[in-house]
Image (cartoon, rainbow, N blue to C red; front, side):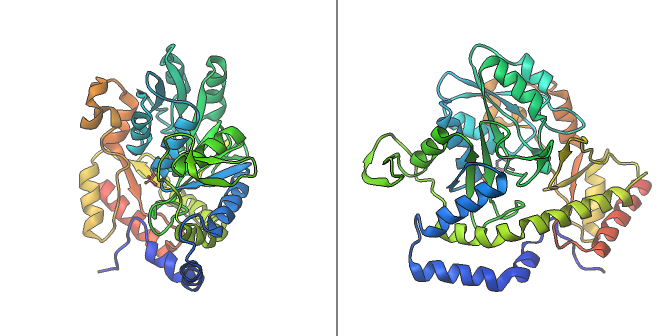
Length: 377
Ligand SMILES: *Cc1c(COP(=O)(O)O)cnc(C)c1O
């Protein structure tokens, strides 16, 4: 029996960078600057630079990033926000918590990202913003989405939770719309050791609003200093912890190397799986994925998953139930059949193990098991 192959291996990554991580944690504890410590501002500057953005604002999670970004754009009660149902539920939750109504439209079946023509059809006088999701690490079709937004005066808020460093026409995600939202959930390409997130933008007004909202609406003076006792608006306790910022600073230095490994691993999967009777991921030539997930399409998914599991290979489904068919969003009134490409994808997608430390031998095992399953099922 060979050793297990997990979907993602956080321990292997930690072992490779352990001394640096422990030094960073120790430094923060000794400084006792747990809230708004110097590592937060330093990480924000480094992450902004990584994204080619003028501003990055650290927040408590990717979900908080989305909610604060939406509010910073003025999204609120009575507004509609167009997004995809083929995503993690936080994308739509944030829209609801901002006070608006999510409007789900179908995906492009090849890229799994928002279909621009479906976005165009869903626009009403109430539409305020579009939230494209750069799913599985691949940017959405941003030129087409931005053109629609411009025509109707809408905000574009990127959900870049899965796509740190991904490129669209050579430009990194994070400044492709008005504002972008990142998650540093532990399993993401850049993961903290707990919850964390960030908002990036080139718009100083949006950056300022997110800065105030994350920290109880505290007034921010022209010198950039926060007032301790003046609260200009009702905000939130959604700050980025200094400890997480210090950990993220260490890991950000490795991210380009880890991304290159993921890209190499994805390329090898594509080569090893060529000709197999499964649907392989497609990357449009103007985009570069950072392969948060390597997602194939199969018919008898449950059988294939069981066959792989029996050999110690863990797989995932991202996502089995589209948001428009979740109980939590039933009040929006969608029905099965409303988003055919989304619903078909939900039935067939299967995520294979991918992470920077995945070895060639492990990959060969995964592919062997998959080919075996494909021919015997
Ligand atoms: C992970 C994720 C989020 C939420 O991020 P958290 O940090 O877990 O709150 C939002 N959108 C997408 C697409 C995600 O994958």
